[in-house]
Length: 408
Image (tube, rainbow, N blue to C red; front, side, top):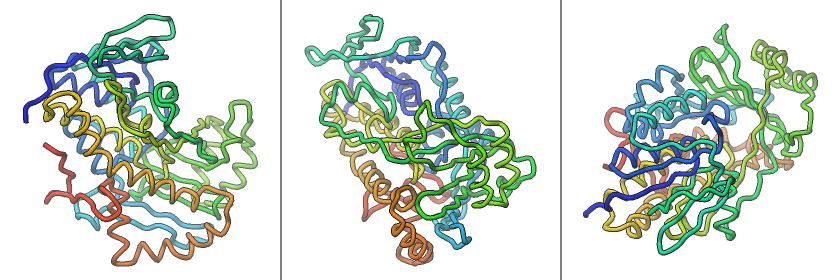
């Protein structure tokens, strides 16, 4: 197939998906302009887990080795309840002995992507808070809060996150309800190797209302997550550190040194999530990707990975499609099934860990650990963790070196 001719592309958002898409499209020869609402682009969020899928996109960008130096190798996921009964126990090694994930702080990943963006020919416009996109004759013009108009562009890629205001304006039929639970998080040093020595994402749960996670993110640091109802995450609501400290120590006494660090620092950030479902990926020349298109709860740890795969799929679709419409249709066909699976699976799984339904917690504790050991279910659960699922009945595989192969 012939490729789409050189396009004028606008990218709204300077996060993981936006920067990756802008860089890949600029490398392919398209004229790319990135719009960022902050004067100085900066990351937002805590540690995250890069799966073999996301690592493959970083490899395509030439960033995998740098990411591995900054991050921490993760060999699996271990979740226990308050009685230390196993709730989750999955290992990448079941897929291939050389397979692994990578825990990395979002700031470190942002820095790598941002430096790579600046090395490309993409143009970055900061302090441009985009509030509207006007479509006319098959092209699109970006309008910022100051009233300045930019463009027109052949394609505008919207990657402004799960709380996207442009999605609300341009796709009124989109659904993006706020999850009733979110989390607080902090990243602290793990000088005693309490958590970073075992290369695992670890979780502790009590029922469905109490959940704590610890993710090694490299440089002897670990990100701590604590689940809270969304009403307790409002800006004016103070976090009761003494109550949190007591509950955390009771749930996970082995992590006392880390818990005390976090309590003493009083440096929690807050995060809320949306369950995003769009009626379609694009409306003419305006395309949504990343969390703006398919945000979920972080329970399956796929947000950044899905955004990176969106960016790569878009660059490959434009290289393969005969025209822009055909390319965007190809992108939708390729990304639709895996994104649909992860959106559905995350939405189904989340109440078993974050809700006010105690019976779901009892069912989880009784069944999920058994499922992790079941010959038929364990491979599906592990491939879900690794980001390999294409649907409920199909999944990609890793190559002979334990790596995920992107579409060429």
